[in-house]
Image 1 (cartoon, rainbow, N blue to C red):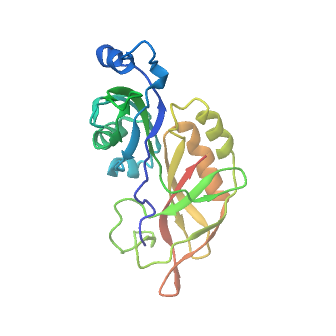
Image 2 (image 1 turned 135 degrees about the vertical axis):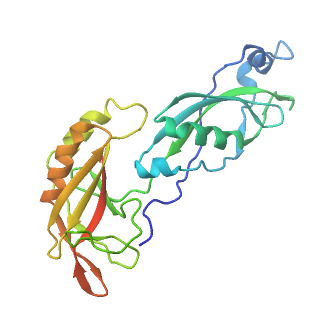
Length: 254
């Protein structure tokens, strides 16, 4: 089974103009004549915004979020003096810097067409592909537990999910307080680093879940995540048409 983690599209959004460097800001804003105003300067236009790399650690932790950066677009359209203002998680810092350093712009210009340096801010977003959404707003998806490469069963006879298998299907998510807890936490989360849980879970040949183990970015989510998945409904996984007890990982977020 192919990983449900895919290359994440990241896009820089021109979110505002902030003067970070005094001399360059003065040069960018200072008119050449008494008739020219700062507002008459045409701001930079993004021409190329390469995708940021989604690191293995971010995938493993199923992290999502935004990074806000400041930079100065020079007269050649190149980013200079790139700085991180705030980031949802430190794991996104370097990928954001690497990505923005490769951005290219049409430089800002005065009314007469003369290019000038201009300070801006950009937001780099890191998103995983969404799964299914429950009526309560919880997004869930089944994925292969990280590191599973063997196809032999464990001592309890449960197989790890592999590419050859048809994975179990979460046919009905039964929310046991996960949405309430996650919604409350998301209101206080920095940027858009949403509350999430990865829950290791075994599904038997009758589609019954058992032996859960939750890893959440907030301990308050562990019990409602486990309770929700134990009460949810599943279709068992198969290999060559035969049902098997299979160990999976379920990613939950709100």
